[in-house]
Length: 320
Image 1 (cartoon, rainbow, N blue to C red):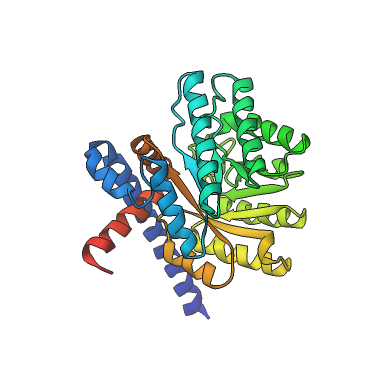
Image 2 (cartoon, rainbow, N blue to C red):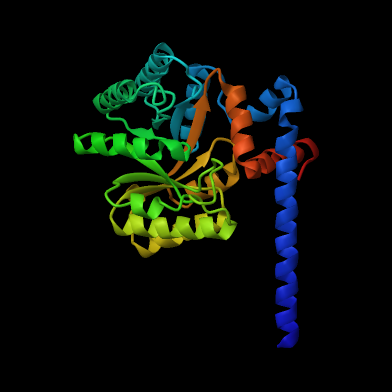
């Protein structure tokens, strides 16, 4: 018994050390990004971004649909600096919805409110968002409002709730499990993408411990399912995938009552397995000319994703 206990403690310490070393490697990869030539970043990111044009996004969505996967299309462009740019991004979403409709694709859209003008003028953002939601409704489609850093959380939830209360049933929102406030934000949310969260936030408002974020993710998922919300379980974490499968199984949910979501190019084999097992699986498909800014920012905000990229690149170069 003593030996088993010592072995368990020793193994746990080794595992913690390995995980810490992997995290250090991920952060080291991120620090090197600014020195990496843009063509190299583009090559690395080509698996994770559809491309610069809507045609690129359509091509990727068509390929995903052929494999039984759904998609959500995101127009890159959070760096807008004036109202005309915000209106232009909204216009691109109208183009996306029109192409989805015309080509019979199984896809919806995800919008970032900063790209629609949230930091310029809340009313401008609301007008752009409502126009996209109305267009989507006319085409029997759906709009997911992405969640960004904590400075936008109240405004994002406020706009979502206002649209829902106005009778727009084809709109959903995102909540982030690493925020301490998330449990208080859940009541009344009808359609939610639940993710861990990637923005760097102060410890006062966000959990930093890996297991604490995981635990809050599971608590949030259980709460949303208990309240009858439609939940998109957005994770690449195998533990959370397993917990998601457990929660939906124990709740007796049918296939149309939930879905899993993953980023384009991240764990596609696991996504294939979920589809083969009969689950709905939606892939986040970003496209646009702001691919470089998106690539660097996402990897800097989420060093673990940088590790996925590096490991995948290594496997492709040298084989498994």
